[in-house]
Length: 104
Image (cartoon, rainbow, N blue to C red; front, side, top):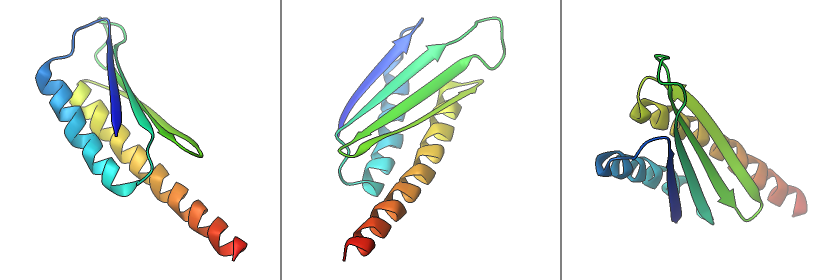
């Protein structure tokens, strides 16, 4: 899977990038045909408490899946986004399986 990680308004540490790649590898097991994954980490407003936002877009041959969350830490945001995408993947697979059944 081709993963592109961008960090806006700060420099992402190697530890954070490794953490993201580890979490994304779990998603990769659930969906076979991911073309690319785009991750955007954004420091929203430094005065706010919940100012760390993670957005992940999975590009698939038939479309894309997207989720975004904002929390106190980038790690927590990434975990929540991956959980949201896992649910979307389940729905995507169910829909795809239903379409295949209708064709047959």
